Amino acid sequence: MTQIPDTLPLFPLQTVLFPEGRLALKVFEARYIDMVSTCLREDACFGVCLIAAGSEVGEAAVPHPVGTEARIVNADSVTPGLLDIVVSGARRFRLVDHAVDRGQLLRGDVVWLPDAPHTAVPAAQANLIPLLRRIVKEQGARVAAPYRFDDAAWVGARYAEVLPIPELARQKLLELDDVVSRLEIVQQYLDQRGLLAPGAG
Image 1 (cartoon, rainbow, N blue to C red):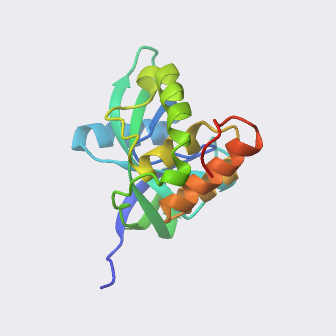
Image 2: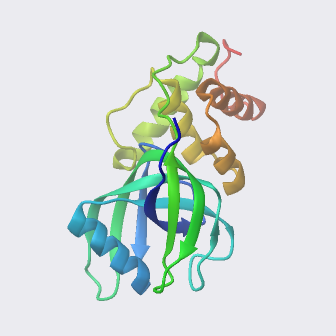
């Protein structure tokens, strides 16, 4: 059955948001302040996409086709003309079309990608878990509970957020539907750098 696309305001950024991830943003352009205000008033979400061409400020950027729905979990306005918000990643989506409205806000027609079913972390990737536990402890509130160290999608996404890799590589990890493949890529990256305890792989 063909999905009917939903329309979502888009916030193209030089970063990637993953489902269940947290992202802090400073919002100062009028188009995005209006967008955030509308989302807060209507309990609505917007989409975060990595920029494929262009920049975060000024003329609307060209987004990568796969992004993540962002729900605002905290908003604060201490300085006039500036909003500090924290968003939580929800569903992944694929853009089927996008256009710029009169206020220079990008709006996308999106179809939702299926949620990853719960998949246990395979024994071969079990040595990823102790390191991630240490990372999450160090990150503190920047990693939202509940922590699901037994879930391959959650473990892979949390690693993908923190690895020191190019944003385009992070985007490729977001686009992967196979959560075990994502773990294998992360494991190979960490193994090559001697960051994992022996005993898996």
